Length: 368
Image (tube, rainbow, N blue to C red; front, side, top):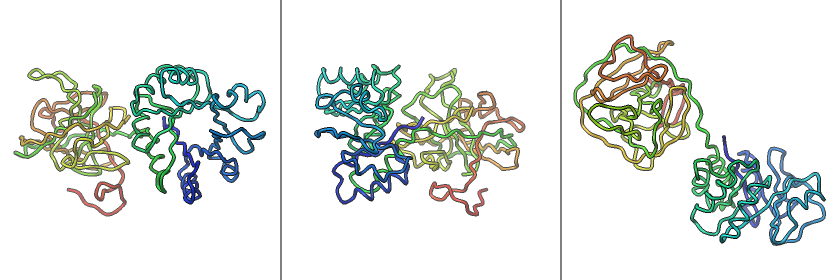
């Protein structure tokens, strides 16, 4: 589920109009302001949030869809809701110590909307609020300093805040924030590939991709010699007789091979570094982004596996010529690479576009 992206335009000055135009174009979820006039021209695709911190409340909230108040200086959301039945209300809490942290937990459990600001950089208070509000139905929005912090907040306790509020410093920030909020990695339509040939090709460099994540038993990475065809290589989560399992690792393939990364891009395995992000894929085609901890490139004997899709597209994977290197077949069957033979079926993926420096593009490109 994607997260909510709110833009705080209070005090923006000359760039405010450009920021709002970009935010509307990018379908930012909410615009936050302390001037009701800023909300008049916004389209219905944007939630209009009035946040009058440090000022008295007007008699009428006009175009505002949601009003965020600080009960230390305003009436509570519940009190205001009885007076203004057509407007939603939420609560702001700035967490600076243990009592305000408890206030934040109480608000997150009971309010429809809670906007939080944390004074200190540690994310422990946010973890506590998220845990306290785990079963609550309201939405929790956390103020962040930049897009990088937004990505961190979205991942706290694996669930993260429902959304973030950012005061943009420049044009381009709304676009970057919206991209950070789109946390859902799209499902892929995997296909059955029939192995047509298995060939020993001699020595070469292969890459083991060690991630910062435990893979599931039916999960791995898509890897292939061609940008338009990849095979699902399983992680080392399955027991081996001569070495311990390494559930964070995919013995992925030769260094020239493609794999899927962020925003629909591909990367060569040789390009991956500590901190890179790659796509983990399971046998149902469900995906998630995982961080690379390191890549181990070593010289090993290599095996070339050719396969064909039902529609005729050809796929190639070159990987380490060793029994413990495996790929996945239909139903999550774990297949040792050295035991593959013509007629076997493996799972794969057929991207519908060619690649130029990793970006998808429609152009003539012959890979062989």
